[in-house]
Image 1 (cartoon, helix red, strand yellow):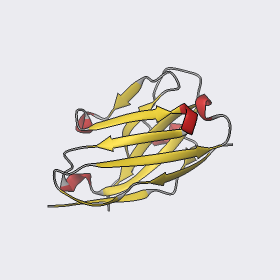
Image 2 (cartoon, one colour):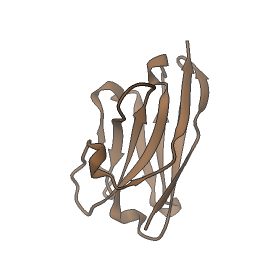
Image 3 (cartoon, rainbow, N blue to C red):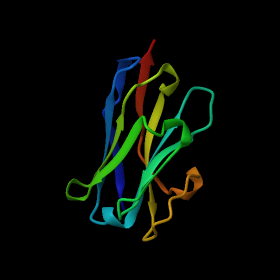
Image 4 (tube, helix red, strand yellow):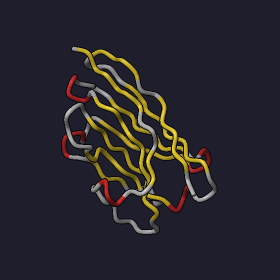
Length: 125
């Protein structure tokens, strides 16, 4: 079983950058597709980005060119680099994992069985 712990959230001004980290405990990190979701107040949790064990990535259209996902298997860590942040990026960001050997990336939150506790990102205007 893998447990996920996010960090790196905080308060940043519009136009700034943040890098979120998600450390996965357990020895089977490489067997998971790792994803990031976010949930703004009063809104549904939405897909942001995900990365396969092969390094394949998928992004929500709304964040393409602004956000980069990466993973370091040696550190059991997945990162979310966020640049040019806007107030509408304000949300709780969740790390998620889907047990999969496939190169297919799902965007539905129902496909992900493991979740972190979330980290708050607040972008001020």
